[in-house]
Amino acid sequence: MTAIQQYLQQKVTHVEKKLEAYIAELPFDPTPLRESIAYSLMAGGKRLRPVLTLATAEALGAKEEDALPFACAIEMIHTYSLIHDDLPSMDDDDYRRGKLTNHKVYGEAMAILAGDALLTKAFGIMAESVLQAGLPPETGLEMIREGSIRAGAEGMVGGQVKDILAENKKVDLERLQDIHRAKTGDLITFSVRLGARIAGASSSQLAAVTSFAERIGLAFQIQDDILDVVGEQEKLGKPTGSDEEKNKSTYPALLGLEPSRQWVRELITEAKGCLTSEPGINASDLLAIADYLVSRDR
Amino acid sequence: MTAIQQYLQQKVTHVEKKLEAYIAELPFDPTPLRESIAYSLMAGGKRLRPVLTLATAEALGAKEEDALPFACAIEMIHTYSLIHDDLPSMDDDDYRRGKLTNHKVYGEAMAILAGDALLTKAFGIMAESVLQAGLPPETGLEMIREGSIRAGAEGMVGGQVKDILAENKKVDLERLQDIHRAKTGDLITFSVRLGARIAGASSSQLAAVTSFAERIGLAFQIQDDILDVVGEQEKLGKPTGSDEEKNKSTYPALLGLEPSRQWVRELITEAKGCLTSEPGINASDLLAIADYLVSRDR
Image (cartoon, rainbow over all chains, first blue to last red; front, side, top):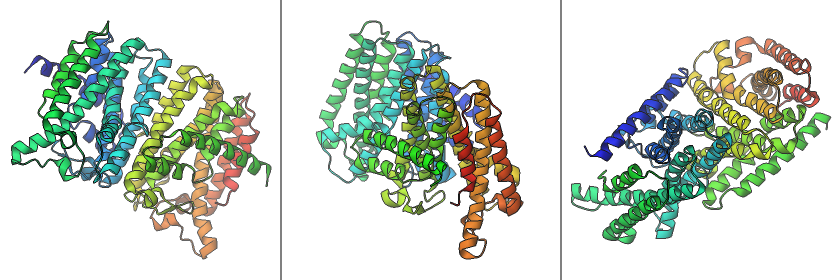
């Protein structure tokens, strides 16, 4: 196991331990709601967003302990979005990460409500953790305000709608970037900015990590599209990924496979440059995460 | 028109004007999301919760202007809950207040996402309005924390799950009260407490308005159940309300019609007493609202 894999594994362990503590706080009644929430929240995954919050906070001098509640709040927002996206009226997915999706196990009503509860809980965790982390309360209000924008109609929810509207349609590169900026980019950017705010980042540092986050968010999405083509290609011997099946526009389809790969490399180089050119950031873990994100094969 | 009806109409006008201002702030892209949100948010209704926030804030000396954003946030949470409750996998209602439900007009996916966006926006509005209203930022964080609990798994969302689980089952009076306390009571209580916090209420005043809110919330629900029986009875000449059709337990079914009416009267008397026995509350409008709530015929 490489150093970055060890680092990520350690961070994922800390995040999952804290998530379990939040699940333990949920009311026992009604039981199916508690179980449905726990099922999706503990369904594994890369935990990219909370790890970015922790790594950014630590890179700027904050303690992991202070960042953990915020990291968990981000993961709850991400998990709610996955539960709702998988619903029959949306992407209609039966499996995620090899497990049945929430609504396949608990039914649609419970899946919708588990998502609602997770989103609601995320804001509560942010609000209750501000003073515990020794942050100025004004900073907490600003975090919540930004989270509402990046996760709402202007950001993630709006992006999901744009994505649905783009199905079976030809979209150009600009629109594709706009969709992904909103649907996945905004929450990744928020994860990083939240970490920076926990560390009391200067406005110049906040701008630097924002540029970093926007670039790795886009690179992550292009890489996802590449893997969807290449992964299937290697298995099936023909380029029919799930995106193509669903008639979704992708970067490889718009730009070609090799130019997409080249763009990912450029974005990661740029992203790393944003951090290394800014004073006061202990960037080594974030740089390693950036490299790792685009070297992954799943 | 009576004085209280005039008062309510004026408050509803102010709330709806502010809601329209928030709709105007929504992104134009994606248009269907904006339209779906506006459709349900401006679909009328009693606006009970935001009016309670305004009335409580003013009863304790705050300006309506400072309370309006919080009143709108509450109405957004209430509206999101109605959109999700109406979905085919939940109550499967085609009409609400004589208009097609959100998913009948915009489809299930858009209805779910409009609800998600409204809930998300509500927390953002609370966060951004704290300093504008001249409140201590710590108070803002406490409002958001409480909102998360009362609207989440412990409160409204949990109540909706309990309600679903109770369908076609015999529930006793204690359970029925527990369901309603969570499903509708918690948000009514939050509306009132939010108004009190905006006015910088003392802990004794906060306790008094909380007791008031809990009693009118319960009375409101019992009255709803009574109207469901009596309204239909008078029209159809037989006691078959929609609750009975859906096999939902009701107070009249558990206690009888006249004892239910008696209980409503007792709760309203108690609720009013909570306010009149506490110094520093200019209670006249709140008292009139309490009376109005249980004299209504729809």
